[in-house]
Length: 160
Ligand SMILES: [Ca+2]
Image 1 (spheres, protein in one colour):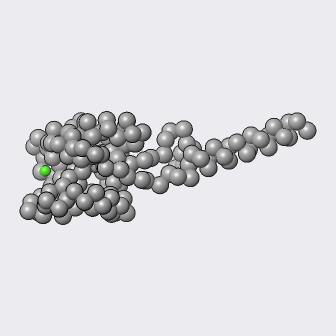
Image 2: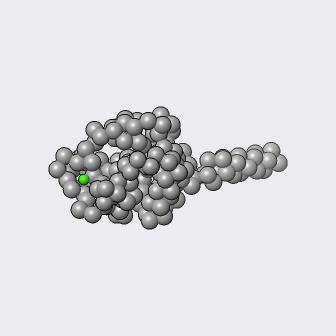
Image 3: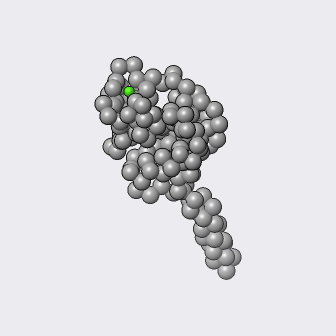
């Protein structure tokens, strides 16, 4: 009898935990209140218990652009938000830093990535330079805004 109740309570607790933890796993974005280099941007996101946005689909690209537009910081004709990708470890091999996954989806601007000393990925609105909410590799020391995202933490049940 007690064993059955105990098992029932376990199931209730597991279901409650899952509801609290994993049913809000959709990405929610936040743009940092100040500009900074790529590393500071990454650190800022982690302090917020978030990470620099990983944009691995058209849907996520559109969601990030929507969020960036909503910040209304692009009226001067220039606005950039750091994304979570870099090729600092191996030039030309862009990786989402927080997962180690290679970029399979990208929305590079014309002629990008241009390489050289430009190793960190930014979403640009800079029509004069032909960036219309497209991606660029920029020097990681450039001062730009961060776009952070909520993500499913390791404590959650991972589905593959
Ligand atoms: Ca570039």
